[in-house]
Amino acid sequence: MKAQPLRPQVPTTVRPMPPSARICTPQNSGVPPASPGEFKPLQIGRLRLDTPVVLAPMAGVTNYPFRSLCREYGAGLFVSEMITARGFLLGNRLTAKLAAIHPGEHPRSIQIYGSDPKDLGEMVARLVDEGIDHIDINFGCPVPKVTRQGGGSAIPAKPRLVARLVRAMVASAQEVPVTVKMRTGIDPQTLTHLEAGRAAQEEGAAAVGLHARTASQLYSGDADWEAIRQLKQALRIPVLGNGDVFECWDALRMLRETGCDGVIVGRGCLGRPWLFGEFVSVFSGEEPAAPPNLGGVLDVMENHGQRLTELFGEELGVRQMRKWTSWYLRGFRGAAGVRAQLSRLGAMDEMRPLVTPLGLDQPFPLQALRASRAKGSRTQRVKLPEGYLDDLDDDTPPKGPHTADEIRAWEKALGAG
Image 1 (tube, helix red, strand yellow):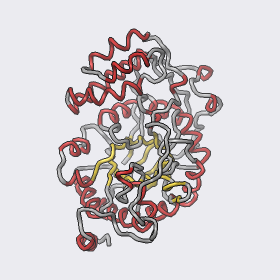
Image 2 (cartoon, one colour):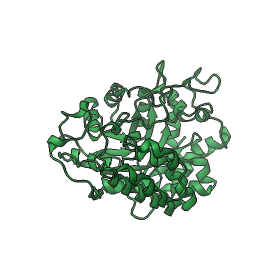
Image 3 (tube, helix red, strand yellow):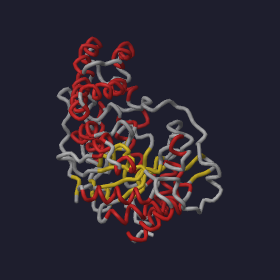
């Protein structure tokens, strides 16, 4: 099964530009586009991606409206925001909406959160029956309410637990590829990516994605691309690098410097869905088109807003759009002056009157290419269950809805035990 490249559908204000007019930050001014045959297509199980780029799953961000917008600009794999296994199995209405398969969305990709093998296996089985094409497991969430229960980025500290969870998913997945997304470790003193990656590989994971920061870093500092290189050297399956890909040229540099097989793009594309069209261009050996001016950005904002309201309804869609306005307008002259009004947006048709006075012919600002779109630059001390790191060989799942006996019986019946 092959993910077919789509022709980028860019705003009418975008025009191709000659190489001399490249819009990029200084570190990327001399980066050449891909040469013919330089990079292989990314093979994840039965999925083949000619453009080796994956949209990172991001909570509250990579819902269907944003995924569909990114997909229209270029090729790649576009992963859903994190879907909780327990909520999905219990039939939570919003969870079901976020996990729904939409016409024309192919390949369809979902990221699961969970730490109970039975829940994970049963959710994967249901998704396979519904026609899913790719499943990812979240082993990288650094949020305290998750890690203090032994979930998310706490799990890779215990390779046998990683193995048990991946085994349960792969046993239910049939031919659908299962991948793992994780961080480099808990903190600089507790790096886990190599052992956890090997454990996932041995249990049948089709690829491993590495956000090259620890859980304690959150989104601060520089991503450790050297860790991506080390993981690539340690594994036989594809390794996808994640961290500090803000420009299409960063993706080329990451593959060249680390040898990884593909890139995962997160914060860099927030408010910039056209970035995926730029990836298609540079991996095809071409210079990308210039990013849209403010008028073009406003067109995209309105398009995005319409998609949000179609999925969530007017009230919730408008509330969701409020956060996006800040990301779309980052760096444009005068945007700070209307930020407060946009944060209180009451209807989608209020955006254009607020943005138009800023000057729709403003070119896309260079400083916006690498502007921070994270939740601040703070670090944290990772919250873990008491004594969690005392026995790293323990494969006991964190406390969940099923007893140990129930889980073992399910594993035995499925052949995953």
